[in-house]
Image 1 (cartoon, rainbow over the protein chains, first blue to last red):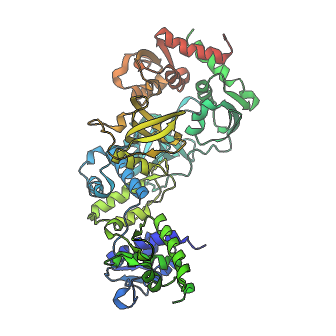
Image 2: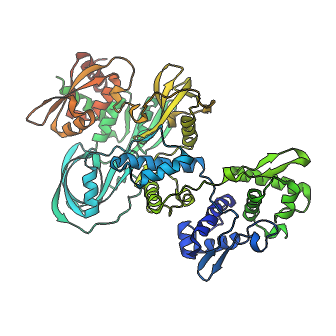
Image 3: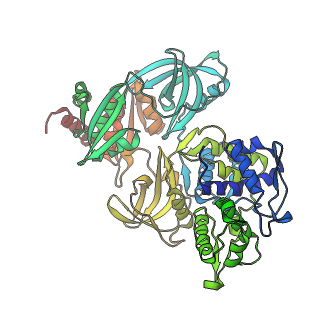
Length: 306
Length: 308
């Protein structure tokens, strides 16, 4: 592994000295784990920290941190003894995370997180004027409970790709939010395989009564994995439809006042919605059989008004 | 000690330790002679120290200079450098750790911040990933300090009173009062392309009980100034529960036995209504008023290749 840039190590060590001093004795592995570095890097850091201090760099004028077997031992001393202030972005991140979660758990207004934020307010401010809307859909608490307790769910799910409502039995593994939407990753008992469902599209759910061993799963990487069945579509859109590429993680390029957008589709309903919203100036370039999709959708909707 | 044997990090940290620990500001000659790692020749040592100062500044460590030339003295104010003792108890540190582990900015590692405040460090992947923008901390500082902001948006130069920052639907919005238009406005932070110039602090007052979460209409059809027109919308059973959740139970005018609902919503922006409606495809249509029906059908006719 190449050596980390000097500045990263500098800020790490400024945090590490007080961290070690507060703990007195810590296994080297625990230090490496806490700071997300290798054991070798941790050992090198400890050796360096032991050389820091003030002139004449002897005896009581050094940071007293030493390595004893597999343990790091730190003695109280006055140099670099407290962590530096939070940088503006660190402070903003902590405050935002705290405020976001407090918003979800309105009931815990007096809980430990609220108390922690109150104490942090001396350095970060009290969060006035900062709001994070996590928009928990109504089904979220029930899905969460099913995740934690290992309860199989029967769901009616609106599949937006195909504009159909399907029924499924799922073993939910983890709930998470990406790009403002809540998802549940689950084992689909009907079709098999791990699938993701947008929780706001679960129209109805109930527990089947069956249980499974709760899974401590991480959220899957990425938002959308179209898989092998997808149709590759190329769109030609006016630049006024820039919201399309802002709202979805798509491949696109801009030239001569037009956007060329590439997307892998699992069903045409998503594309119909997009074309209807952008309007007559949107064109499907590829594949040829979808070039008339927007006009067809428009005629179908018009029929509702006649 | 020879310069070659002392790493840059070690030299920088020793400078920080010395300047924090010293009871009074320190002359350059003392720093470069006593801290290991500076070149022996004074002119090169001075150049090196200037570089070190800017490296430290980049890390957020401000070396304060008093006096000039040969009289220059340097120090670091411990009161500004060190994080004050926050006194978080075990339970509070854990709660903060859970929050910062669960809710993260895309691409951000909260570990260092958590270790600074005495928490354990992030655990597991982010459950909620928020959009990141390097300008957010400075924008929030402007909100806190009530600084007037100058920036261009939609091709118009704005003088803006930022009352708050709101994250919704994967975007950050700067919400407040636009002096240029003398009207409440919200701007998507990622769409502010050019520079954002902050003005003096305490430049305006925020209305009492202002809530940034309420500053932005949630529906596109409500995104416009002016008088609202009430539109009635028919929604079939497939989309009924979703639409009612969005517009609220109070908007329901009729529930039919086949699961269809009719809702009445205030529309300020007909184009926004159209866009919102098309999200439901064939499952929803406008019943009334005729001019809004016309907005939708005219658009559809143009798309279908009918009319003009």
